Length: 408
Image (cartoon, rainbow, N blue to C red; front, side, top):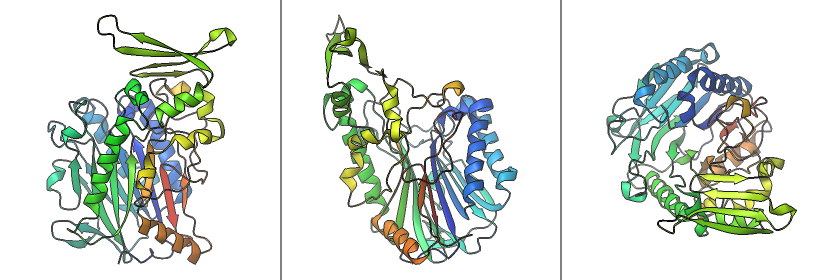
């Protein structure tokens, strides 16, 4: 079942977005985001579409509940989505349960022309035909149509209340079965700590958590199928190497706290040119004077420092990246092309797949001249949209993945 290609003419669209900021400013950010999302749907016209959201509901979930309900209602009832007559929505809204809450939201839309599609019941261990539109938002732990786990607290002891975890669903389209995993991995808590070693301690934490997820989805409890893991991996560039490269000819000044002697700031100055400051580094500050390096040619000059996925080269595959770093875009509507100076820009949002999923794509591409596996770069989904959003143009790598066999 897992080895067969999807039915001819079936287009599958996978989208991932950290949407935390949308609920802080629903009147501006949310409206812009939805407009661009509908545009990508219109452009690709998928038959099966999966939208994986992280930080769903924003930083203050309780205060954002009304915005959450409005967002979901808009997605399910908008004219742009009227041809999708079946849907499954899974929202982790149990914010009062610190041991379970992940703030993940998973949306799945099925086009009216798609006839035979089934979803796997993990408890009954059988597939069930998908009909109608259903929303699950209370206790996802008891929902048999998915598996949800929050990472153990000892994975990231620095964070007293981490919301990182994963949600897994399984689908079958015309005898082609596959898992879709929504994931949110741990962030870098301090730029200074990340700079200390190569690879950083945070990279090791993400490695451990992702390894745990992969082991879970291929264990012996269920039949093994192809899988796509897409979400906010929080993958970062190797900070120490990046700083050394960006500041090759700079001198470093160390600033320490008077009471503890702890390093609180690093200042890198040009050796000449009036010793202008090139980079200032603090726990939550990455202020580099030449931001264009992260945008020129889609930041490809820095891809050599994007190393975290290499640990899983035998277990995960990714199409080539050809879009700028996806994080941390400005949340100011007037500066949508700019990065905030809180972190070093990085490709945090990814669409990854198993080796068998890769082979499936290659077979589809070889078997149908019109097949077009592609990654589209998408807009800066973490916050605002830029004046000229980068949706639509087919490119490799990224947060939006389209696989078709034949034309719809």
